[in-house]
Amino acid sequence: MEANPLDFAEGIPNLGIIISEIFVAESIIEDLKYVPTALWAMLETLQMAFIGTVIGVVIGLPLSMLSARNLNSKFVYAPTRALLAIIRTFPSILWALLFVIMVGLGPYAGVLAIVMYTIGFVTKLQYESIETIDSDPMDAVSSIGVSKFQLIRYVVLPESASHLLGQILYMFDYNVRQTSILGIVGAGGIGFFIINYIKFFEYGKAAIFMLIVLITVLAIDWVSVKIRDKYIIKSQHGMEIKPKKSIFS
Amino acid sequence: MAKNPPFSLISTSKIIQMNDVWTSYDSKSYALEGVNLSIDRGTNYAIVGQSGSGKSTLLKLMNGMMIPSKGIIKIDYLTPNMNNKKFKKMMHTIGYIPQSLGLVKNISVLDNILIGALPRLNKIQSILKQFPENEIQEAKSILKLVGLSGKESRKAYMLSGGEKRRVAIARALMQKPTILLADEIVSELDHVTSREIMDLILDAQKKMNLTAIMVHHDMQLALEYANRVAVIKEGQKILEIGVEGDKIVDFQTGDMSIEQIMEMHNTDTKK
Image (cartoon, rainbow over all chains, first blue to last red):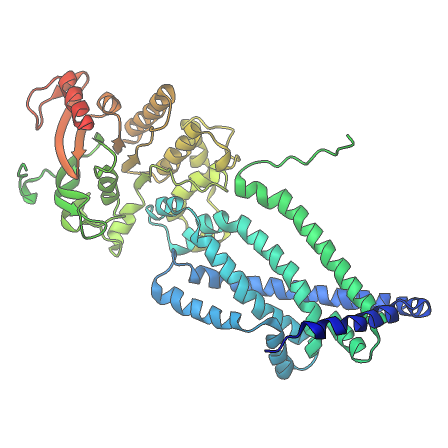
């Protein structure tokens, strides 16, 4: 692989050209007219990420139960894990490409890609947290002679629920970022606009769309931190978290 | 090692019978080495020994969670076997409280207790988490019995050490048990609380006419509450005594006073 630092240094002025093109006063006003379009595209992206995450978690949760070593024999968890490892091998953009070929251009292919990606990752996160559950309640409840389903329903799920909520939030957060670029291969969402504007050298418009992505991602990040503080940390540590007092009070 | 009578001669009133039982965790060394034990129905039985002597292992054999490497075990005349439907049904009525108590910490006290009723639920009730009204009432009356009324909706992780033990006892009682197994349930508790917990078990044992088998670290406590005490050392039963009030009844040891037994246990522990 060739990597010459000089090439990088010579490329810096190009960045300057792009930035100067973005900040031309007349074109900024012209580009701002695209904000509503960008917001609609972002909304579509959020919908895709949300639907993909929900379906992925619904399918992934039973698979994570089958992959946990402390719940199953080798004959069950080994093949399930192998299947999940294959699913995880493909990045979401490759899944999107595959589904665009299968179901055509548009958000449907994007949702399917997010579903596959979510299954691969949420299952791994979840079975790892199931395996760290304290074995004592599982042993104590198993000794009553309950069924495997009852053990999962009454011990495993409540004990891993706080992790699960955190993982779903993390996955949604991550999927919003992923969905933003799936448009590059024609799988819907805001990325479709961004890549086309860049292709036609309309950097100003592309910048408006990217700014919307940035603001949305930061907002989701902020909301998920709030949810985490309010519900997850409390249940994981078994204590009440008191809201911090304002320094002005 | 004292040779016990063959199985056919053992009395039918025995709820637990072990004959020359050996168990191993790693197939290199044995946790139990040829233990013989028989426990009468309705007894309050105590197993005493040092850490690592094999007393917890002995308890796990009594609810079928462990299978011996060698020897015969009969629990209410059944050989423990998870694949045997009859034995699996019997497991529903063996209350087991591990040393760590095994509570589900993120659910409420009432939900923890209702776990004891799970074997009586059908599939749909299990999925929907719909316990029949009579089971909920039963759980509430047990809650009252163990002195936790008004705390049913509290999460298990919020409870004190003594309260957690009460919940674990309540869950076991919810099983409508014939046998109650408890592993060092009062260790780490202060003197007063541990007596309260022991009184509670004694009370439940009399009311429900069950056989209580409890592992203890403390010989004094065992002598105070049990009708019979077995002392385990390095995987072997070295002593078994019967207790009637202040009197120690000759069983395997000849006539000994409580002081002599205590002295013997203490020297044993020091060794």
